[in-house]
Image 1: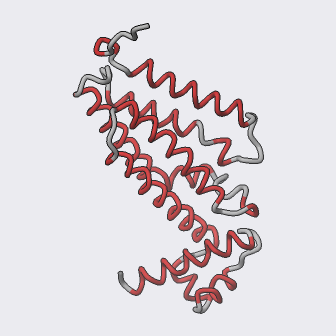
Image 2: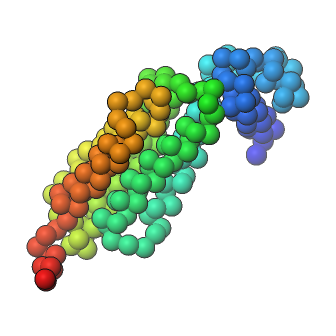
Image 3: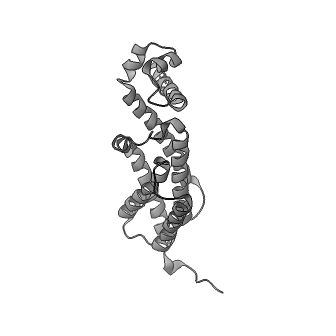
Amino acid sequence: MTSTQHMRQRIVQMAHTLFVQQGVEETTMVAIAEAVGCSRRTVYTYYKDKQALLMAVIEREISLMSQSLSEVLARPGDAITKLMVLLDNHLQLIQKTVQRQGERNASFFSDTFNVERLRLKYDQSEYDMLKRILQEGHDRGELLVPDINSTAYLLLKSFKSLEAPYINRYHHEYGKEDYLRIIAAMKQLLRQGLTNHTNTKPITQ
């Protein structure tokens, strides 16, 4: 790691710590510089303003989330099981990521346009994971998926649509039990919609 990369990393780490402790609005660039042990000018050399630094913090959080999701592919299990685990991990990571920002930052991810822009490459990574799981399941005869690409795209969008109660944790329309029922319905759709039923053994009573 170069000295420039190291300094960028330190600034982002300390900014994140202060954002959680004090809230984004209450944290100044001067406070960040003091925490890092450098001048305010140095911080501005790497990040033009607090918004740019906030986006760097969010990008770092998204990157950590993406790395955790990639571990699902290495796990044993059939395709449907992996899809279920991927969905659960996706939502758990969103929840943990939002919680890690602290109570002062309820709107940490509310800048939808910029967050979505930052997520593009990580969404692509999850999309590729979904395609790989679907393809492997199709090749093994576990799944019946005529269009791998379109199905992976629909699954990614469906997974993301379930994030809202975590991202907007103080302003969502579903109670916990309602939300759990929605997730259960999503899993049922995955099982019934993707399983290759011609290869499924009939259930004996």
